[in-house]
Image (tube, rainbow, N blue to C red; front, side, top):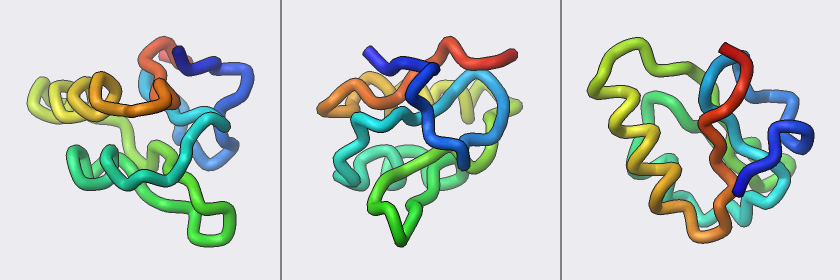
Length: 78
């Protein structure tokens, strides 16, 4: 499970975030490309935009559920 005390500083404030467990597998960026981006220097993903529609929330939840290392959280700052 993702730990919000270990989330990357690039994550925008809100419900979803990526923490330091990320292994840069690209799954979240493929699943929800409007919301996840890659830090090229560090080799990890982060939440670049929080979803505002149910469709966006569903995409982020699909990315969260598919993350092989549970690096995506949905208990961030509301």
